[in-house]
Length: 408
Ligand code: IPM
Ligand code: MN
Image 1 (cartoon, rainbow, N blue to C red):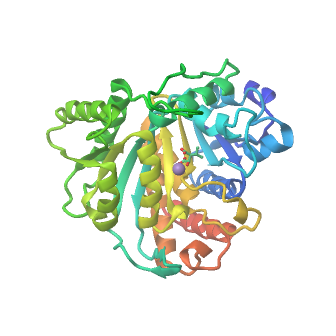
Image 2: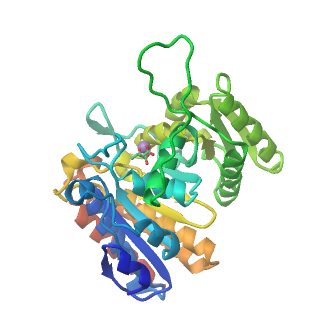
């Protein structure tokens, strides 16, 4: 066991290997889907030369309610110093609030986003064949597979979340917690609560640059195969968005081969609903991206299908976009595909980071296994109209992956 494990309360299941993966199951159903993410890691390790050293750290709001801590001391440092990539299940539990009113477990999800400078929240929205949409309580095919395939990049360290992110990162590292300077608001009387929304040129630039780089690895928009980066903001009204758009224009000028377009967040909500095929790569600010990707999840079959990566220059963590869904917890029923696809993103990330094209290929084979599973359509969880359990879906996809990996 390495030094970092000593300081944190962990369930260490050591598998010697070149990639150190920290698993943060978190709350509610996060704990169930984390097991399926681990099953995929185990399947890769068993069928390739890639190995993973997995360290599981209990954390979150539920953990806070039972122990008084969001996670054990030293956990942030372990994630920072002794981890190559992190998987996070979900954070959030009813009644789990810190004395200052913040989300208990925020040190984990928000503390890592800010503390590890994970400036891009990368959220692919892809509709697989065989996936229905739950609309009016019924399962229907609304959008066409192949016509929904975009990636939204949500700025992840500033914007409307900035103060909360900083405070959470400070708490995670045992520093005095940041509070913005008090402001006055002419015309407002009585108690006022507010969240400053700083947007910086640097923060915007690095996100937008990553958007253009990701666009180069994709196949363009479904409608025309053209590589396109869309800048989504509210620059008709806010200064932060005006800076974001101006920064976008500067970066776009360096990518003359890539098509660009612009939209306001409110209009964008109707366009992705009506014509998702127009979009390839989208960049936007923090809160807009939070909201847009929940709507985006509907286009891909629901929150159970939505995977994400929180990515910075030196670190990354991968998580399903859905929350802890406490009402479904303990029933082994939620969809593990968002988590399995988060591991797919993790493999792609590690492959690119370590220049290992085989890991990128492993990521692609996870995608293929998920696609085959969904096309077959026999073993779906309740959110996709089936009755299959979370673990059985995980087993079925893992079996397909094992076959693909061993056939090579
Ligand atoms: C998400 C979640 C988080 C967010 C919550 C849990 C703090 O909704 O990852 O989208 O608002 O960013
Ligand atoms: Mn969200």
